Length: 620
Image (tube, rainbow, N blue to C red; front, side):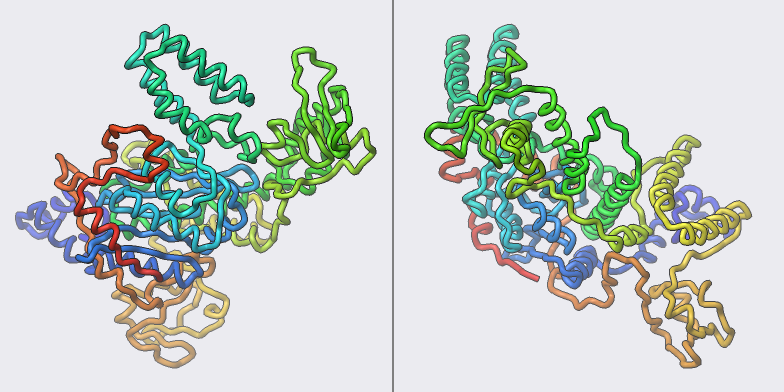
């Protein structure tokens, strides 16, 4: 009873009544501590990391000369596959207060062919110095991936680490964080009326595609308020290639302008993680969450394929052909371009110097005076450069030249990869330890929300099964509900076909394999005489892999040295002694441009820099 989740006050009252003894809350706490697994947190993390390695993943961690924790970065096999398939754009950001050591969690996400964010790297770091972050990001380089774009929120350490690991890729700043920073400065240093005027000019400057307009807007900002010139010059205009649209018109950014994908991911995982979570539990929950998230997206993709969709777009033969070769998201984008191509009339003039290029302009809309340079497979319009998909101008040109209307440019990100049945069948292996937000079960409303989340999971799984499979699972679900209604004790097990055909006996009595509880670490089972096909197994019961399990049984994996890493718990109340755990950055006294060019980031102490530059690295 002490090992159950009964509240301490209630448990103390029960024991006092039955034993007629005065039992303090501290006594109950001491008993519970004795029942806990004596395994340390670092040993638990070690087992999980070895399971990731055995499963085809990659793990890297670093320690100080005193064997204290510095960083831990890992990628599962599924993450590596997602990264190699979608390496165009990576979004980087850190989140905080997700473990009891207050290690910041660095997450890297890619954008898949449906426009969804997919996590490809998790890293726990002691602090956000350039040296530590660059070691974590080097795992991406070890996978032989060279991204084209990195999106960050103007974090100096992240930018410096990216430039150390990947000198070539472009770095773009999140537009939301950029606008927020400018607005905050203007509200503090300029009058409200003038602040709004300058902010509108800067916002227009960030989105304009014309270099001339960019320079004219710069002059307008200086004329409106000369005192802000130094701020904009030092912090923004000197790095305009990181945020201005006119400086990146030739790069396919998939229309990603913010770090919202990773911010949304952080808000979801923080429903399951907090500052009281151990590192081993944190890593485990992230693995389960990522695995279930991937399988739910696969289920949604399958549902989208078999469901009738209603759209305002004309379902022409041309759009149907594009739906066969593009993902639903890509086909929807091209569908809008097809509808514009059919509505508008374009004036097409061949270039005199280079006959493979044409100048195209819209004759229907007098407000649209733009002229675009188009070839049979490229265009300089914003849609083509951002998405690398056929635009209305290319479709008009190919139609006039009587060319094949269906084509995909080189490097198209939204190609439809054939959906494999075995991938969908793997959805049934969604973790039985499904993680749900921490909702209180004390009220009827809270219990209703918890059950509603479970029923939503069942809807996602059951509606896509075949008829026979569905009927079998439905029968099991009915039995499960009957046991709950009758308030009967029961054990849910998962037994393989091979085990089901095996004659099993417990203490000499034959037992149906369907009802044999599988619990390799159970003390009660260890004391039971188990025999398979008449041969005694012994006290050490052989652990049985559950079908569909994504995490390798850690008891079968050889140990490594991470168990020796020192993990120091940080007090969560009051000001911590280690100032590195504060996430607020110190205000820099010099321009950002000098920081980005020289890659000099302020560290807390000179002693720490020496430690970071001599980091012993462990590769698994």
